[in-house]
Length: 156
Image 1 (cartoon, rainbow, N blue to C red):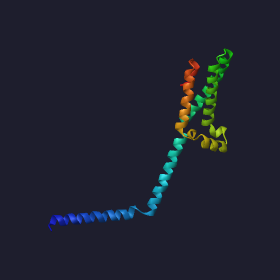
Image 2 (cartoon, helix red, strand yellow):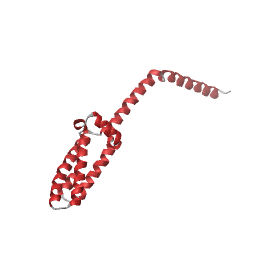
Image 3 (cartoon, rainbow, N blue to C red):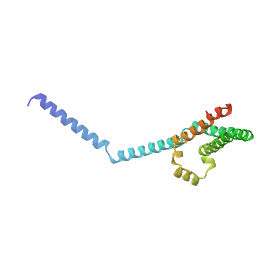
């Protein structure tokens, strides 16, 4: 054997020993438990963020829901008085969806824990931000179909 091959062999052994020592120090049960706790905490944070969303978005959705209800009520009265019944039905849907938006975004105020659990059980998509966003999109597009200034403002 040459000096170069003996040197390479010693380097390989030194690297293996270093890695083994590092593994003994780093891969302890305490480190695994700490990593597990950290991972659980971050997963809970991510789950909460996916379900609740940002406070500013929730506030905007709440304002949009109230706007939908108010505009829908005014439009409903106007449409019934002019006998535009199909548009009046759409306004009833808008009022209903606006009410759902207000209840969903203010659920801590308007609903008990039991009702929130039932809502999450039977309308699971409303538990998540993407599900509520889809519902809000439907409500907004319904309002956009009613071509007038108030509905256009509330729908957008």
